[in-house]
Image 1: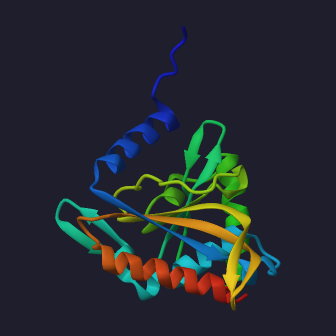
Image 2: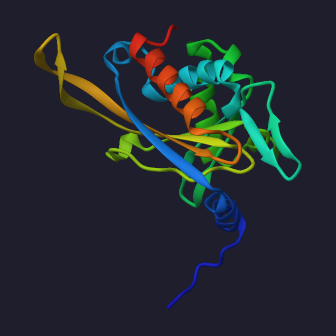
Length: 211
């Protein structure tokens, strides 16, 4: 039986996931009606990232690090975007995400994902993230609970968008519903502000992310 050593990218993932798993974390899940977003010319991931950036700007408790000295709020929203690689997982960072247009965000997603898969990004491209988003919707996963990416205090997991029966005006209709799961470090963030962030994020997506 061969053994794959925990070194390189795999070793870094193992160390980081162990740290994230040790945090006293809480998970919250909501379903979002994506009707307003599916008519856009860009994909789900850039729209979610744009909505997350705006929500973090208004709910800064989740845009923070937890350090040995205490909670360190981050003045800028730098979003980590999980990218699957053959060797494991990479999380390049979209800088100053709250100041970017939807078109700019979509371009950042394309360019960073491609460069991460080609392993052409410098180490600094993976540093300084204040919050992470991971989207497994394309794999058919309904929902999941991601592991925190230390020292960040929050991470959002995105599941697939699925036509689902919902009630509107007393009638049963079909709507494209997407699951979002927020995992947060309870040492830094309490349940109520985390729930308000998730509710705001759902509201932004159901209103349609502006281009």
